[in-house]
Image (cartoon, rainbow, N blue to C red; front, side, top):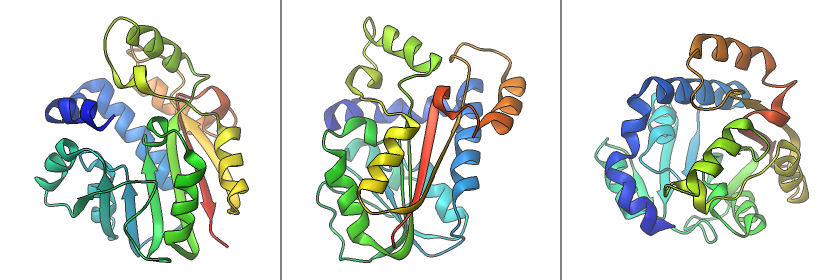
Length: 223
């Protein structure tokens, strides 16, 4: 997978400059940061890619480091002045209880043993520390359209596995996390043109309709 992301690193951020990309980025960040309780501290952006969330955490006052397996993605992130390193999510290169927050957005789709990664997240979190994991939802209309497209055009969705809100919650609870809760946004496929209406519904339905949302996030606390 790192090789695929190396190939697309140079154009990865371009999508976030499109009208759809700006809407997606804005509403996903709204969901993630509405769930986050911590306001400062030491943070790990796990699977940081080109540093989209690393930069946001830095702007919000966190002492943040990004980690990713793709050197191409890391090159773009570092060009933004971010502290990012190459590493393996299955064996994090940090001491026990190093972080107040671990955030991982759209990385878990591309790992095959999520229980090991969650155990590593727990290891590097301080007691009382938060984890937030964001992924694509396999039950959404967005997913179905993108999965079909990936049969004909190579996209990241061709290589991804997907989760449900309940599946993410179980993943954290089984690892011993407490105060576990989830939410979801994006209820229309990617070609839906009315982003203002979509964003209004996202904010109203992020809890009640999370099972069919395209983007889902789960939060937990290390006891």
